[in-house]
Structure formats: C-alpha cells, structure tokens
Image (cartoon, rainbow, N blue to C red; front, side):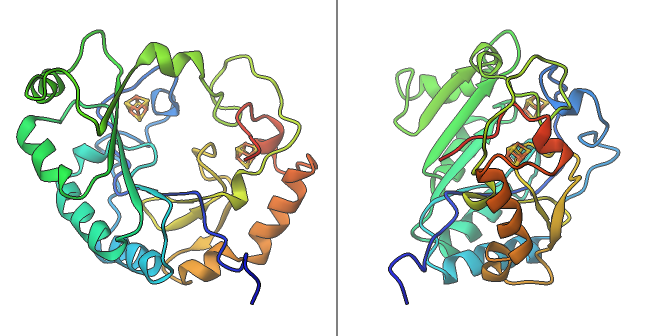
Length: 245
Ligand code: SF4
Ligand code: SF4
C-alpha cells in the first residue's frame, strides 16, 4: 500500500437542514424556495451518525462542517449532532459556519465542547444581539471565533455555478471534486459546494460507505476531466469558483 493510499477530503460538508432564515441576494436561497421552512428537509439523525462514524473509522483528520445552504443553528439538534461528530471523529477539525442569528452565550458554551472553529458571517446591517453578548463575555473576541461581514462575502462572491447573475471569470481547471465531499440533507453525494440544485450527484450515502463514495470511479472521471479543464458538465462550464488546491 502506497504512502498516499489514505488521501482524504480536505473538507467534508454535511447538510443537516435545508432551512435558512435569510434570503441573501448573493445566495441561491434568494432565488429558489429550497431553503424555505415549508420545504425544509432534515437529514435523519441516524444517517448523520452513519456519515461521521464512517469518517471516524477512516481516521478523518481534516475539516468537517455541518451545513450546506441551510443555517445549521436553525436545526435544534445541532449541539447533539456535533457531540456525535466529535465523539466519532476525534481527529477532525469541526468548523461551524453560521449567520449567527440563533447564537447566544448559552448555546455557544454548549457548542464549544465539540466545535474547533466558529465562522460567523453577519448578513444584516448589525451584529446579531446574541453574537454581541457572546463576544462581550470574552472582551470582544474569542480565539475560536472568526467574524465576517456580508461585504467580505460579496468581495469574493461566487456565481454558484451559473445561478447567481454576477460577472465571473471562467476557470481554467478545477480540483474541487477530489478535495471535498458534500452530502445534502437527503444523503445525496453532491458534485461540489457550488452545485446548489444538485444537477449532478453520485448516488446516496445510504447505499455506500464513505470510502466507496470517495473512491467512486464516476467521481474520479469527473475529477480527471476537471483538473485538465476539460469540463463536461454545464455547471462547471459556467462556474466562477472552480479552483485548484
Ligand atoms: S444566511 Fe447564508 S445560507 Fe442563508 S441565505 Fe444568507 S448566504 Fe444563504
Ligand atoms: S468547476 Fe465549479 S461546479 Fe464544477 S466541480 Fe468545480 S466548483 Fe463545482
């Protein structure tokens, strides 16, 4: 077995809920109803546990995040789900990306047991009150909290593989497929973070192990083409995000 046999995803993102309480103009949630409460889909807890247990069994030691386009803290199971993730993947870096709208000091303390990094993005005009209260307890900053504003996001805005009508520069190549693993609330293995609508999926994590998902020949074929810039999928051809490593 070669030294590189354990090539791992740099990022694994698992969507526990499709719901987001906001509709930011630079987000596909502002165009589609996928993120609405009425259409909310939550990943079953057993499926989430299967994913993190599979990852932990493979000594996953890179970054894990419990979101896709839903707001993770709108899912009331989140503290327990992250405890499950922490126990199953002791080597992983658990990073929680949130809009901060539901955060408060008590919830922060609860999450802090399992989370290694909080990336909070302010999408409104002012810092959410619960974030302010949380930071104030630590003198305005905390080593685990990185705070960003919508301006930071907009400065690097992605056209989300052609969905968001902003100008973009077509990429010459993309290595995302073999560096990241994205699973939506249904358990579908997604092409990447940009493919909001899931136009291309590689089956469902219910039916395969995480190793089988990661090493799937069809995924590798897409990767091989994309790293050469030989894009075949429409979303790759209209993507302003695609990146090498
Ligand atoms: S808060 Fe985040 S996920 Fe929700 S609409 Fe805004 S950018 Fe999208
Ligand atoms: S080119 Fe864009 S849409 Fe295609 S795999 Fe890369 S990030 Fe995803």
